[in-house]
Image 1 (cartoon, protein in one colour):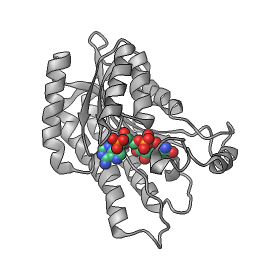
Image 2 (tube, protein in one colour):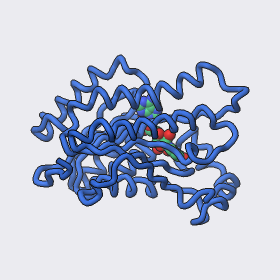
Image 3 (cartoon, rainbow, N blue to C red):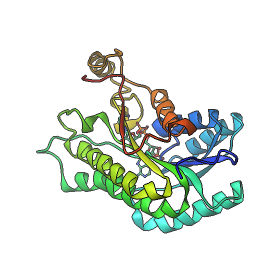
Image 4 (cartoon, rainbow, N blue to C red):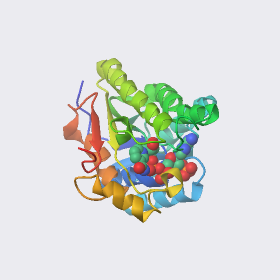
Length: 258
Ligand SMILES: NC(=O)c1ccc[n+]([C@@H]2O[C@H](COP(=O)([O-])OP(=O)(O)OC[C@H]3O[C@@H](n4cnc5c(N)ncnc54)[C@H](OP(=O)(O)O)[C@@H]3O)[C@@H](O)[C@H]2O)c1
């Protein structure tokens, strides 16, 4: 089975959707008629604001707290997701998993500590792998998974080695997901954003005009991205007519370092 069933409300689960790219994805999906379970790590009030914005668009959302670096919390989180699905949508499955949550730290290879390295891999690799594993029974057959990589898995910048390595792992994981889940009609793809001016990494790009200009000059479209550039890309890979795209990496960078 490769087609989804459009007759019921479609539900996405988006990690790290209280701000940035996850928020943009949740709002874009809502505009296209998709409900969401959004997760936040520490900003409950931002998550509630996103829930309210989605309601204003005429769709339903539910916010749950999750630290994707804490695999030991995943069984309780899955139980909460089950409850939310039952209570809010009368379902025991959802349709789309968007693994988006993440944080960035920059350090040269010489300066990267084992703690920094492990923290990045805990969230971006271990967390993505085991959260997806834990949620697999709840993803409807015919559903979709989008993982979040980075342009930095294709091009390189000093200070980003450990972070970019995690994104390389995410891209490989995505191909294996596509391979193993094909029997259930579930597709898996990676979206790899270029530089986007968000709160990411403490907002170093958003707050540095000279850096934005420098990176924008390396981009065919002449600027760095904003969060809204990404939500539509993710939503389009979750649209009913794009289900034949599977196991792919889609870079959304405005044409960076072509
Ligand atoms: N911005 C870029 O230039 C860029 C480029 C390529 C790829 N990406 C990737 O895109 C994704 C989103 O980035 P963004 O720019 O939207 O960043 P952002 O604005 O800093 O938002 C990050 C989101 O992830 C959540 N989060 C962070 N660490 C978490 C953890 N351990 N457990 C659960 N949630 C966590 C945050 O929750 P709280 O706010 O509640 O802490 C927030 O919702 C990340 O995977 C990042 O690697 C970003």
